[in-house]
Length: 275
Image (cartoon, rainbow, N blue to C red; front, side, top):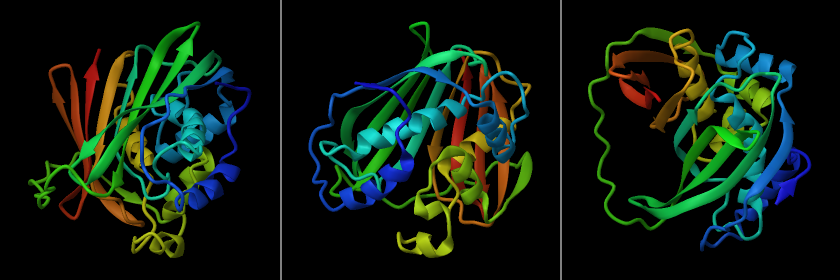
């Protein structure tokens, strides 16, 4: 289904809250949303770069197209036939692959669909798959994995936290980073905005967006990344705001391993692999 404009998140998020009372599971829809003639807003991109720590260049950071495709994901996840509510779904992992960087002045198409419904120890997981295409060629591809908690396929066991690696840097994350990232991304999930709204969903304080933590880590590699690469992240424990976090980066053949942790507990673990 072709969309003529980006879906309005201001309308979709209230719909997502109400839809949580009617979703009862089932199969994923096979619908694919597409949008053609997409262009980057340089001012929005510049604001995103500042919030996430990227420098300003004529190339788009690999995490930024997620912001453009996210409203299409939310539209699909709030459709009546989508089996799981958006509110309460946990973002487990995100993998982005680019065969080359998108340029700020390029026109491209976006494509979004859901796939790979499968069991998880703590419920059911599924993927939201997005792509950016230039003249029909997918130059950017993303798989975001979500968990809907419920009866699982086995025992999850107790989490064991390994000894964290030696930090390469220490960052202070301000208490307003959720609101600042929401402003540039449109993702105004209440768990990220204010301690009071976060408590309604079981968090003692507001938490940072997972995609902000990924982008902030990726920004630390600027100047050291190839044109074509994949960056794969698994989200661990949420970053409660404000926070002091430690970032580590370890080179390996063909790329990097990296992690973000605080109080010796992991927030994120990722790998960058050159293509």
